[in-house]
Length: 356
Image 1: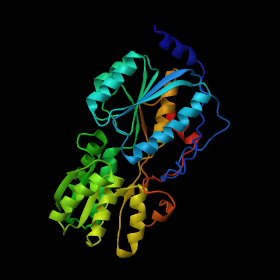
Image 2: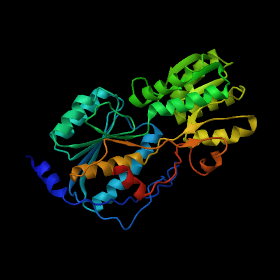
Image 3: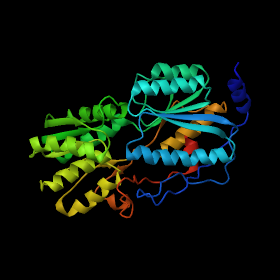
Image 4: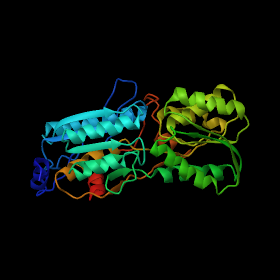
């Protein structure tokens, strides 16, 4: 038995709760982070001196950058408590092969916990299973793999797409032409969102997809991708957009070209929420969902519990909130930057319930 495994078995005798206290982030134009509420009665984790790494397929999207700060806040707290001794981020810059190499490095360097945002639903399975077999606590959040050996934390991306597809189908009374605006091709979360949307839209045979385009989750490339599709199809009746920056780019393009207001699905990207609210009097309507940044903290806490020898559910599902015309004012943050993702706070008790 390795030293790492001996440490985990010994540490697993005591089960304890973790506190989450995420510091507000301000002055960077993106606003403070929504974070789990602190519980000062919580005890320190039984694990200590853990070596933790985070492998992410990219850090460019603003949602990922906000998630990075949310996660870093909790890492800093756990370092102060002695739970984490070393933490490192590995950014693959969109390259799955690079991500596999990063994970291999963490295995070779004897990490205790590996957190993962996957660039592929299946290409990472062998290397992540190798990490699990080596006794490393592996927790994959946000963009998920298909391995049944890896602990997962995330929303249901297929249901995400299905919800938006059904809403748009009903909003258009089952007929019309639409543009589909998806995230990067080949990335698990974007592929799964489209799978759900496609399933839902198939129930409305009189809705035709005039164009189906992919884009990075950033305004500039999304505006370019949508602009080309919209120029070729200016009379579309709606947009099935599966990411907040994508939705913002679509609405921005339509407004700039003085096009008629049409329903556009979305996400809790503040730039989109603000533009949506401003366009409400002109007939703008949407159903948007949210990918909570705090799932990174749930994943971290799950990894720490696993490293301490405690049991954690193999799949921890984060509920999908709905943003509509009726509750938009409860979500939009007019004083925050466009790249901020408003999210309702979650308590430490709720996190602990998820980990049971």
